[in-house]
Image 1 (cartoon, rainbow, N blue to C red):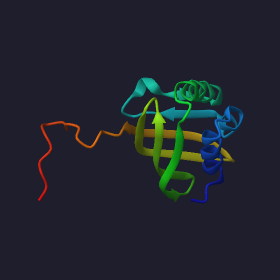
Image 2: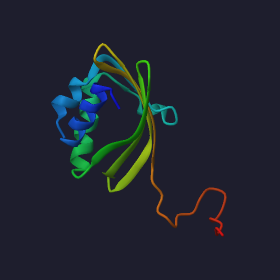
Image 3: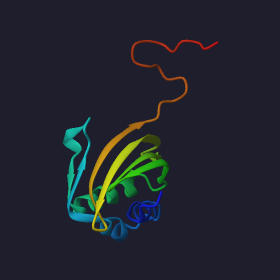
Image 4: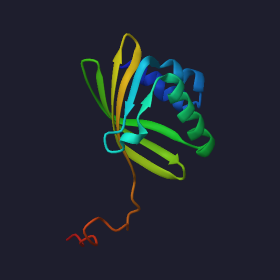
Length: 128
């Protein structure tokens, strides 16, 4: 991945550096959760507040982007948060960067199920 702003963000998150996290975002930033609209976030100060809470409740959290595609000003990445409130989260985050700042993100993150967890619609079927 060549997007230096996203690289800086990952470094700042893993370093639990709130100043560096906040510096990655433009004043017009909007963080959207299409499946959870009430989680929408506006502006870098709110991003900082959210991550401050996350770092307090999940002091061992680490973040990795395991795969990415960049198209124009967007980075589509597969993300993995470990030890987020005692669980792992995986999903896709689409980040828009303009003028050296993150302006928009869309989160599609979900907790990772345990290997034997039930699935919607019934039990898992045995594989041959």
